[in-house]
Length: 442
Image 1 (cartoon, rainbow, N blue to C red):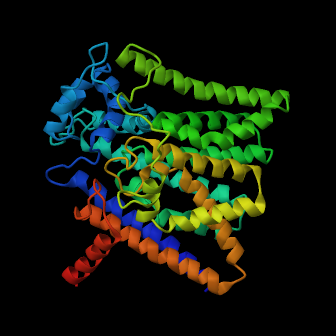
Image 2 (cartoon, rainbow, N blue to C red):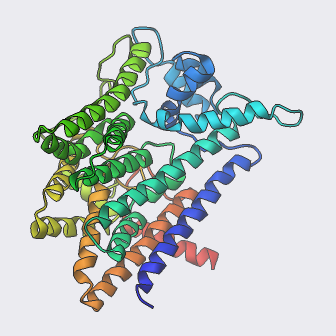
Image 3 (cartoon, rainbow, N blue to C red):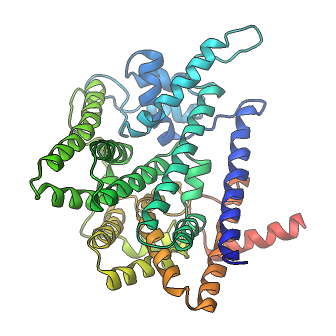
């Protein structure tokens, strides 16, 4: 069968998505109900949405008191922290994730309002199962669209088979499935999808498809990506570079398109400034108090190879993506690839310079969501180059499949609560989990 290993890879990826999504959303029907939005980062992303819609303000103390997404001791911790100049609980995160979840929140709210009958006890509080269910379904849709956008981006350069292998190959061996299926209340899924979509639109503009709606959509996606994670701005070198190139043509249609792009993105930025104004009393500020970068001593080796969430330590197959994308850059020397790889390398430096380079509790090095798109293109290019050597191609497919099974196994151990996400885990410890699980289960 032609592309047999590729078909196995795609089917395996789909089954992985199905298994973990049904397993995780099953928490909503458990007795007692267990929220799927949980954790401090996730809760504060959500508070930007819940607070004005339920409380009519940006006083997050009410959300902390009423939420079921945090243990009581964590809630008390945040309630006791120093307040903003307006006397409110601080929220250092951007509003991007909240904006993306707004339509799904409203859909759940409509359902709750229309089903106020005896025996149905869903509260209109933003925390009950209907809200968490629709929000997660919405995030799953964004995950799907992000992968489709990544495939179409790769397809603009490579064959169908190579593009599918590049996208699904990097996906199944990376941290991305965890943040697109299990922990989608973090921002990484949204950031990945927005960046993939913005790069696809940029590629269309580069190929001459510069309609006004494309420019508007590009502004929305880039703005949403930055508001979901401020660091995402690093991955916008490619869109910015192409927009600058189009701007320098001084063509009236292109100038209007770029203006619409800037305007649509600026509207989102203004919303963020208004949110800061409501909470901090200032429209522009640095919200990560006492957290910063040490650009003179970046932990580059650690962030790549440390057992404490090192990018290539936890997901060694990503090295194929990096190596292939560097060769791709050398062989093709396309301006787009130069800008993409530049974004990847700068991301490594920026992440390594962050004071908490391991990024707290994490499944691998979760701060590289945008860099995965570059690696997907690199793996697609590598697959394309090896298609004439069936043995080399077969070996690459086999290695990716094996690493995919390994990665899904690690996700399974996280769900079982036996693989910690807040401390270093060596390959020996990971292997021991596999062996002990096999001997216990079978």
